[in-house]
Length: 400
Image (cartoon, rainbow, N blue to C red; front, side, top):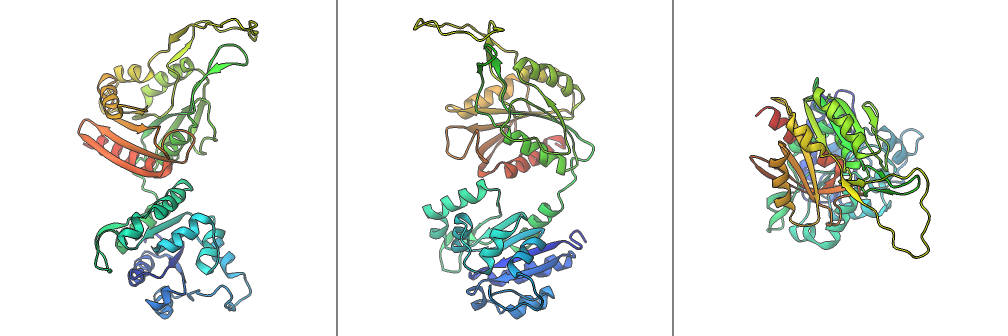
């Protein structure tokens, strides 16, 4: 059983899909998980707490001020015990509470206190799901790293059709298993990831660079590590620390990045170039700080840096998978398609960095995964979630 001994807290809110949550408990128990259920007051109008107590073999918590069987602060105890916190169904109300940090009942209080990964399965009327307030709340949650499954499309209990139907219990349990027991489909695979920006120095205090934070590259590296890969990260300047459990090579300039990547790529099965190297460097680098010229124009000459992706592509081995990134502000797919062909890549992760929630210095991204077989759209989601989608697509390419 994949989940033997794992602690899962399941939050059930007041939606018609609450009856499906009983099956979630049953499936988790069959996988060996220990399940603790928290119900909102409205949820008890749809399903009796006794149902969940019987299926989970644990008391169901509904009231923040209920006297516990033993002395402990219930919401803190459950928050600490949880290895994963799942809310299914997740109504528009609980999603708003999570987004705004409200804690006015047992479920929202415990969710705010937990440090476990949170998975939500939205379920509501299609108009509520598409409402601007809900879209903004979901964007906030995704940026914080909350995992989202669904909702699906179909006939809703209210009589409408469209998005808003809670994902099926089997799908939700599969997502829980994925979060608690990541696949090891990259075991034995050598993965090289680049991340961050490069700096091209003019003098000891001035440089040419860009806004890349390294978050996307590091998210990919962490995901590949969790799926069993032997990961090497070559990173330039980053706003966050690299993940643990990977080999890290630090560089500053594009030339240093070029030198490291062209060596490491020879040993890698998969090369994912998420770094944002500077395309140009100063023709002359000064050893001392340059002084102002009292209002006189100051001219500098830029020269082109070596093309790392092209160099790696020209030395590509049979069976090796090469992935590049295209961060653009216009003509996104046209530019990405040209780069895919010109640099002998297998896939391009194309994203329009002018869109809110995409690009540099944020925890979310919006991308299109472009291969020679077609394109896969990846809507707004956390960079951690996008990293999994990228690895899934690479795995398809490796076994095509």
